[in-house]
Image (cartoon, rainbow, N blue to C red):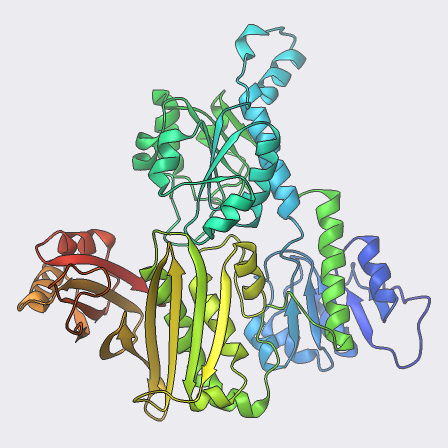
Length: 549
């Protein structure tokens, strides 16, 4: 049943709260709008009545499909009281000019606290001892645990949740070691956390390991048999992030062998999950995806989504919008074709800088595009740089905040001159004191993205989904060697380009040594193993395989 706001006023915008949120969120909305509660509405009733509303607040059950959005003739804002927006057709909303905003920070404290709860339960055998006692057994010696004090906690993924876990673990007197190359060294220092140079450092030193990585094809099964083999004997592992980050078969083997002394899991590859071989292990603690399940997190999500709807409908700043911010039509006509290029250059530059803590991202917009509002291009650069490397999904609105949380400084500048091009975008990533720069432009009437510079080496090649970059001694026959090895692995080269180093030592080259850059595009991904095989041959310095999607 619909419940109209008691303080309704003529001409005020109307907002529908379709799913249950905290009272604080509803009260905030009622300060500004006429609010109806449609919690018990059927899908048919929602489709029939949604055209009357300027804004809607949902959680995960309501599906804002393209068909439903088409019926929402007055809708200007969709507030999602939670982290993801998988139940919203964002492109359809964007096409209609509807702001879609979520509450990405609503559950970070809750997730961090649940990590600590499982950490303590794992260390002190709390659930096992509870089950034993209520079954009528008094088994003190059987459930003797270990202290957290002066133990080493290894954190894989040092985003917002990982950082909150670190702060709480240090309160227990733990030594905290974290690995995330996409967080500045200064941020580690500010939090009193040691920066690991590699995941192997974590494996070699940690008594407890907690994983807080995004779920991507690259991170699926991140903790696998090889990872467990490199860990200390008796390590304990936790996953309160995403199901599938741990290879469960490898975890079972590690538990069976005694390599891993215990595990705590809140998430699983498929959910709901009620039958799992790990549930039968006495040294495994499990919970049914409770990482975000607290009254406070639910209330916070509702209030934050309500804040965003208020901002969207009153001309304020919608800080958690997941679709493109407003840009003037003239600027968008000019800059729109360069958005994919900016994103790809950010992703490529960050990939080439992997291995050191990222401190700065610099974006320079040159030529005719410098005369327009390039803020959107700058945001696209950050999105490309951080995409797939953060716990939360990065987008054009939250990108600056996510960079700031990681201690990464972003600097943007516009220059009217573009050397040999009408328009040029140069992206530089500063990591570990080294500068990695790439540049690109759009070619042809459709401004097709092309890479034109890698670390000062000029070349021209169309940016396709699968790109491999090599640095090598500038000697004859190197392209042929790459082609031969690619062919042996069934990889077809689409195109290749080479950029040569000017005379003199440069970019880490030895005196008298000339280094060239080779960029190869292929019709399929190039595995790290193939890249390593090429780099291991004489004359090659390093290589990177990049999926630009």
